Image (cartoon, rainbow, N blue to C red; front, side):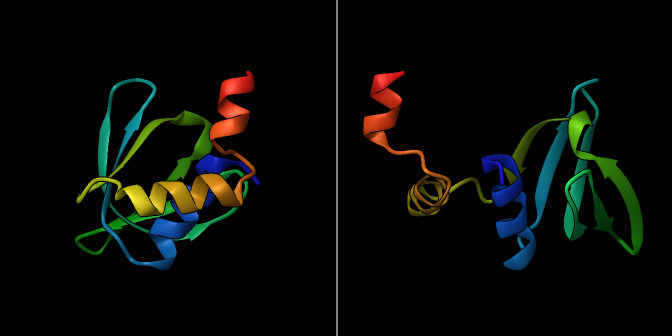
Length: 87
């Protein structure tokens, strides 16, 4: 499971609003209501869009990423400071 997938899954599970920027520069906002290995449903104002994960360039929660959440996601994905330095 990738860090990107874990991050989007975390935001979905905690019902946090987010902004997605697609590779083409389009900004989409809303809540992730469903997620699988290839796509997600993004819902806003009663309208739902299917977004393919490989089209997403950036994910940004409305409130930003808290440092403790970033650390938890990174650690659960096998990334830590020691691994970062050795690359």
